[in-house]
Length: 116
Image 1 (cartoon, rainbow, N blue to C red):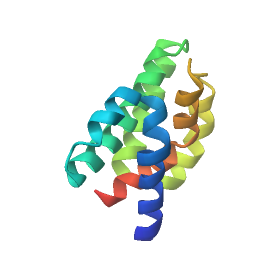
Image 2 (cartoon, one colour):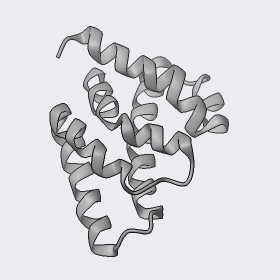
Image 3 (spheres, rainbow, N blue to C red):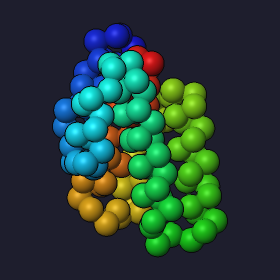
């Protein structure tokens, strides 16, 4: 993947998604140095996705399986698997539409981690 694609996906997280999924935290992030801000935004989006699964009403066994898949996909930086995972992430039906947007764009979180 090209650096431009990583940057575009990070820009989406930074300017579009973070203000929606964490307004207060997003304000604080703007004060951080660039490298720390980038790492924190990607880490927050990753953890928010995991928390959405934990907050869901799926079975405990399904939660564990899905969380393990999220962690594995993110750790490997596997964008194609992340795209396939998005359909399963959408099925957990997050409480907020902003959280659903995160789940439907999980591959962009994985992609943005490539700039770190």
